[in-house]
Each structure stands twice: as C-alpha cells, then as structure tokens.
Length: 196
Image (cartoon, rainbow, N blue to C red; front, side, top):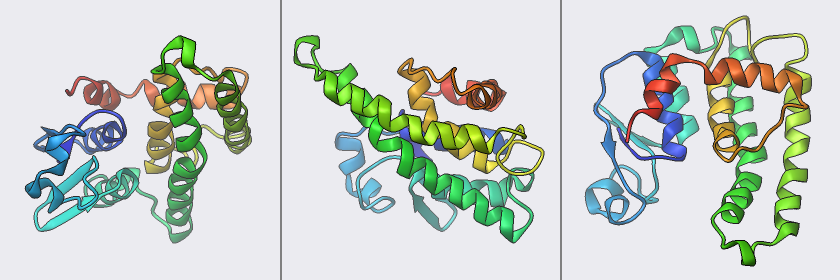
C-alpha cells in the first residue's frame, strides 16, 4: 500500500481493521506520487493507492470496500441490499463532506489577515445539511447498517475525520456525536494514526 496522511488515513484505518499484514510505503503529494512507478498504480498521481497481488486500486472508498470484502467479511454487508447501502453511504460521504471540509482546511492554512469569513461561514452552513441527515439516520440505531460497525461506518467516519482534526464540532447532532465517538475510539484507528 502506498499512502500518506489525509485521505490515505482512510485506507490505513481500513487495512488496520482487517488485521492482515501489509507494507505501508509513505508517499508524498510531491515527487513521490508523480514518479513513473507510482503512476503505474495510480495514473492520477494522487494518494492513496493499493497493490494487492496483481490488483492495483486507487480511490480510498473503493480500496476500503475491496479490503473489507476480501479480508474482513464481518465488516462487509452480507446482503445485496446492505451492500448497496454501504456503497450509498460511502459515495454520500465523499459527495457531502469533502468539498466543505476543503474550504475549512484552506481557511485554516491561509494567513489570518487573508481569511475570508464568508467562505468559512459557507462551509459551516453547508456541513449542517449532511450532519442533520446523518443524525436522523442514526436516531434509533448505533451503526449505519445492521447491529455492528461496518465498512459503511468506517467510510463515513473516515471522511469526517478531517472535521475532528480541524476541531469542527457537531455536538448539537447528538446521534452523530455518539456514533463518531464510538468510531473514533476503535483501536485500528489508533494504530493507523501512529503511521507516518
């Protein structure tokens, strides 16, 4: 597996959940990800990417769905309907959270005198809609699918991990907070965070 921080953390968390042995190759956004051998794995020159035998795979959600289905069937849905729900939540997380989170990141790393409060306000308002939807989905349940933590929870929580790292609170969404606390207390995430 060739990875680094940020989105790669999603795949590292997942592979730690599987419990399999793997080789982690820290890869930067710079020259590492633009080298010919890396582009053979991910022609986009982005991270993460996975090599598993003859299979090369990129995109964190696809990597996680593959890893859990192959190596951690207890984390992968057992029915076609639940499999579709896992894909739904995985795609939903990217579509709903990634863009506003990127606004939060850019704002955080922009010099204070050049920050645009309107952009920050937009990101905060935009994130409320998916947080409310997720809160409703978790109203009467501990996990997104079934009665146990699954790849659906992993994928959504791994996308939202950026908000946690940016100290973006959502405690007013009590079901989301309870669920996120349970997801983020998993030992596999602690091991993933210890990787470079």
